[in-house]
Length: 292
Image (cartoon, rainbow, N blue to C red; front, side, top):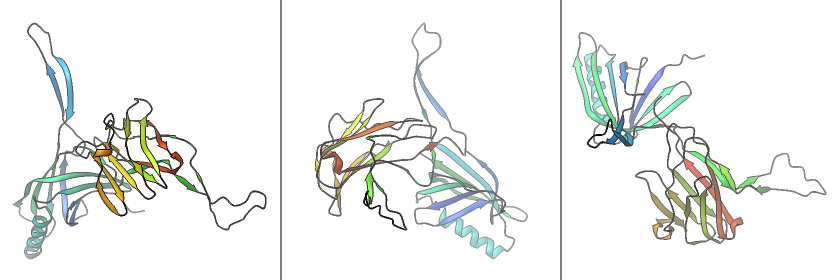
């Protein structure tokens, strides 16, 4: 069995990456900011009041610092590795940082706060890298998908067709309600996708617990895909029809809410005013974590 080691993989928007670990040429000596977050509390007070009155709080952006050494003695190769770091860790590029330990992986968006600072030591070249994560939460590599309304395949091989029962190729998921579980540490936005198999009028999604809903006042045609995103800074409504994606905010019902996925269980029910059987619904979400 291969020995598991911690790795940090920095990947910029151009797809270039550098791996920092104890086994890498870019050897890590110390890393801070992977798990600690800062909580900013808002409060007010008035004359004669003892203490303060709580108003709210927010998680501040995350700062990650990587201190390490380039494990190379040859000066020409050392220069090439420095050049590689300066090219990949370009402050102008957006990037992601991936934490890996065996099969465990978490990803966070980041920007270079300060370009790599190099310090020449007796043998190796030391470096310090400072990253700023405006969104302080880690997430899984891929979004979680929960299908509410969909067709479930029933065809298996080898095929055996009962004479009296016939042949069932697939069947529709019977429940109108699904439990979407958020295993993260904080609430998160969702992207709900309505897919039309035929004509569907005014599709909607209801949060059973809070009675908040998302409703679109539109008649979908076969093949249409209507998407609504509710994440902070990611709110959008789009319609994909005949291969063309367009803005669809004008179809959003005025009483709709950009509701968030609470930590733990979330019950959702889908609906439509006409031809509900022609509707498929999926919910995509990222589970967000305070640390790794």
